[in-house]
Amino acid sequence: MLPIFLLILIPFLSLFFFFFLLTTPKSNSKAPKSYPLVGSFFAILANQDRQLQWFSEILQDSPSATFVLRRSYSKRQVFTGNPAVVQHILKSNFPNYGKGESFRSRLTDFLGHGIFNLDGDESWKFQRQVASHEFNTKSLRKFVETVVDTELSDRLIPILSSAAKNETVLDFQNILQRFAFDNICRIAFGFDPVYLSPSLPQAKFALAFEDSVRISHGRLTASIPLIWKIKKFFNIGSEKRLKMAISEVKEYAMNIVKQKKQKLEQLGEKESLDDDLLSRFLSSGHVDEKFVTDIVISFLIAGRDTTSAALTWYFWLLSQHPEVQSKVVKEIKEHSEVPAYEEVKDLVYVHASLCECMRLYPPVPLDTKEALNDDVLPGGTVVKKGMRVSYFPYAMGRLESLWGSDWAEFKPERWLQKEENSKSWRFVQKDSYHYPVFQAGPRICLGKEMAFLQMKSVVAGVLRSFKVVPAFEREVVEPEYISYLTAKMKGGFPVKIVERGQDEN
Image (cartoon, rainbow, N blue to C red):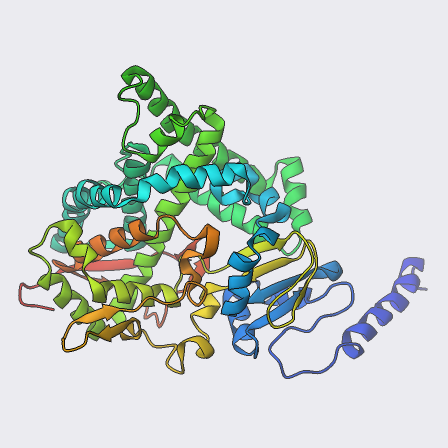
């Protein structure tokens, strides 16, 4: 005889599967089916290891480049690659779309009250206002000539020369992260961690930072948020590792803040403003070390992970497209006699090829906002208060409606026009809602120009003397693009460095 609980359960399961099989309309659309109570939970679970690619396929199949994903318990989330919708949420109706409590609650342990975890309140405005002074022409020139150029000549190039001589395989993704980390620490905090050195030290902080980013992102994408909340309550598993990692990161950032604060106090009022971002914040009247530490961590993420991610994919793409690499090297050599800042500023083809790389492999593939009030998006999608709306740079770079039938090609020329009566190229800027790699509207990335200068400096410095040759253990058609808070190449980017001949493009 069946146990009593099975007698009760069987009718319930029968009813449940009846709804599964019969209540959802048949469709040829790639959009996932939605069922009562659980929504599209099973489709989400089945695609959890390739969500970016899955969402992109759905958007490519959608006439409006917008679809609504039904999660469990009637929760809905909008995904869009439609420029009109992107403009609506990032500019036209900006006050209605913030980070939201759902986002902030998951990242507060790591980011605290830093700029990336705030909506458009007074603290957010203050942080943007102070930070904006760091990105004027004078600061950008100094950044290239005294920080990036020094890091290249004294650290990166010698490491690459040694690797070429000894035929060493390097994880170029790791090398670029170290380079970017030294850069952001020096320009933003006046502090040199010497993370890019010949011994390639495995600093505790770097490992803790990686864990903090990866596990925090896991909270954002969790299919069942209750699981990480239970782990946090009992301090077990990934949440225990996250707590330890964040503690390590906060201690490191706090030490940077304390050292700078002591230095400013010793210098006195007349000399208190060093030429770095941290000095500006400490001299603005905000001396709360915890608050300033949150700011430090936000800028570490922005400066370390975004440019290194873009460059990792860029060097891989060049290795797959020798005709593009040849044009890049030719332009670099034509500008090699001018000062560093002027050289990278005028590398038009390099600039276009970097934009093209980030179209296909954006450093931040997806960004999510939360509606503060009911709204209707361009195209008619209804948004209720509390719903999340995500715009999708990764998918947008793959939409034929935006880039044409050749969207899958790595083609820098799509960003260029020939000057009239000239053989030279002119860069053609795309609309920021068509290409929201650096966000758009009031939240547009303050460090956009600095990022381009840094990336072009690295490209010129490396390719002038070396070839970067992929050295995967097995033949790889395309490395796996994954995302935590920023994009990564799964497993790193193993390369061999080969010296380039003087006459070789």
